[in-house]
Amino acid sequence: MSTAKKDYKRITTRSLIEMKANGEKISMLTAYDYTMAGITDGAGIDVILVGDSASNVMAGHETTLPITLDQMIYHASSVVRAVKRALVVVDLPFGSYQSDPKEALRSSIRIMKESGAHAVKLEGGSEIKDSIKKILHAGIPVMGHLGLTPQSIYKFGTYTVRAKEEEEAEKLIQDAKMLEKLGCFAVVLEKIPAKLAKVVAESISIPVIGIGAGGQVDGQVLVIHDMLGMNNEFSPRFLRRYLDLYTEMTKAISQYVSDVKAKEFPNENEQY
Ligand code: KIV
Image (tube, rainbow, N blue to C red; front, side):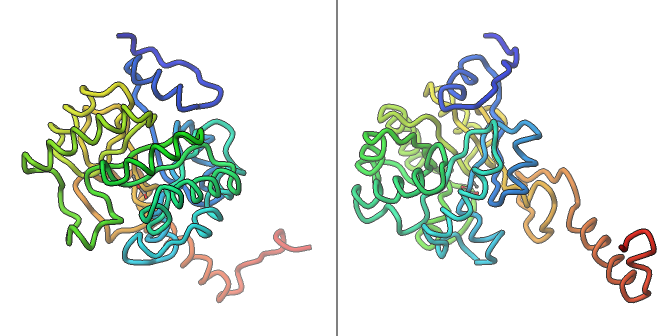
């Protein structure tokens, strides 16, 4: 297996499948607005996820449940305007696909048409099989999401590691195989044991992107606000902070406040 990094001008769903086959790891981060998406794309990310985590980090809700389809389309269209290379995937929000396959297709079509994104992501396995089929039949690429599925938080009752027991682990493996068979181009595995994630990644030919699923999968995803350290209240074991932006931004803003109060901003060179 070659590990050489191919120079992709534009990432497509096929590029990701090729990366897995070539042993090249896939990088994925969330973004929800034009400026952050432009920086992320320019830095060479492969996939940008307009996650329904926007409900938490952008809107301040406790869960991902309140965000609406219109709000997701607003975030996604802002991201798409900035992106030149990455594949843009958008979460179908809670309530936009669970009632029936036709609703799932209608919501996906709205995302694709109104935002210009390249693919959608849905949480769940066999329970939403018919919806996934319907979306795929319309030519819309689908990314699956198994393991901890935050839209079902009130069913689980907790954000702890999923699929530790054999029965749940077996269902997860079967669901991942089903997603591959249906024609999904990738699957996210969230917060499951690393050993199980490795088994899944070895059992299917489509890429497995992990978050809290260990290093032996085909790629990694994090919420951008978390990896930049913009929030110091959320510290799961899987999170690596690459910056401490919370502290840096607080320092910069405090400095601005004191400069304005002390009449040190603006100075002579900063006016007309
Ligand atoms: O909404 C989101 O940010 C996600 C990632 C955690 C995978 O679904």
